[in-house]
Image (tube, rainbow, N blue to C red; front, side, top):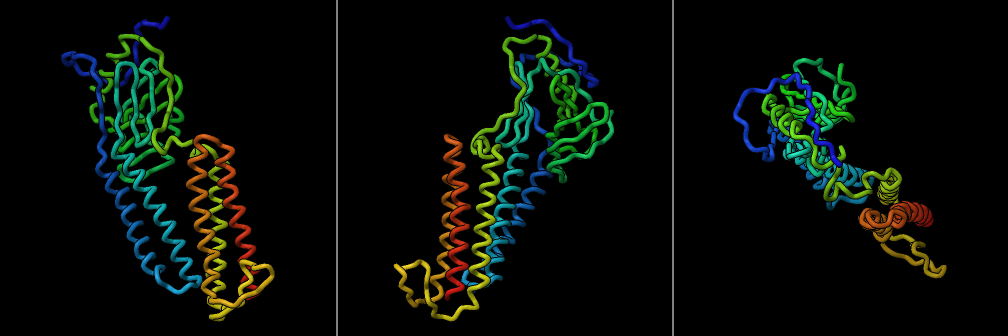
Length: 323
C-alpha cells in the first residue's frame, strides 16, 4: 500500500501567494536562444569547412594531401553532427511537472525525478559558483559540478548568472536548473508533494530513439568501431601516400589470379582503399543495428571490420611492393 502521508519540502525559495488552480501539467522552459545560436554557429562553421575541404578532395589526384582532405572532411562532418545534436537538445530543454514527477527533457533524454524524493530547492544566488564539467558555452551548461553545500550536482541549465539557477536536492542526486520564476516552480512542486504519493516512481535517466541504442553504452562496441575507423584511415593513408610513386602501368599481383601476374593501370590499386571504406561503412551500420538485438553478433560485425581492414592493409603493402 503506497504512502499517502503528506510531506513538506524545505524550499529556500519562497512561494508567492496566488490563487490555487487544478494541478495540470506545468512546463517551465529556460531561455535557450543564445545557446542554440552558439551551438548552431559551431555546427554551421564545421559544415562550411567540411564543404571547402571536400571541394579540394573531390577530383584531386590520389596523393597524401588528398587523403588528408578526405579525412578532415569526415572529422568536420562528425563534429557538425555532434554540435547539431547538442543544439537540438538545447532547443528542446524543458522541465515538466506532472502529478508525481519532475521530468527534465533534454533532446532524446528524459530525467525522471519523483516529487516525493525532492528534499530541498535552493536558489543559485545563495550558493557559490562552481566549475561545470561538460558542455559549457554561452547559454549552455550541461554537465556536472561539485557545488559547495550541495555536493555533486548535475546541470541542465542555460543560465547567464547564478540568480537564474535553482538547485533541486533529492534523496539520490542533485540537479541545477535554469528557472526564471522560481516561486511559481516551488509552488507547483509543493502543491503536488502535499497530496502524497499514489504510485511509486523510480528516479532514472532514460534515452529514446537512436540515443537509446545499447551501442552507445557499450564501451567494447565503441572501441571496436573506433579501431575499425582508425585501421581504415591507415589503409587509405598508405595507399594514397604510395600511389604517386608508381608508374602509370604496373604489374598487379592483387588480387592474385592463380599465380598469374597481369599488367594494368595503377588506378586499380585504389580499389583497395575504396573496398576498405565500403567495409567500414557497411559493417558499422549493420553492427550498430544488430547490436540492439544481439550484442555478440553486433560486436562480431564491428570487430570483423577492423580485422578485414588489417588484411587489406597487409595486402596493399604487398601489392605496392611488387608493383
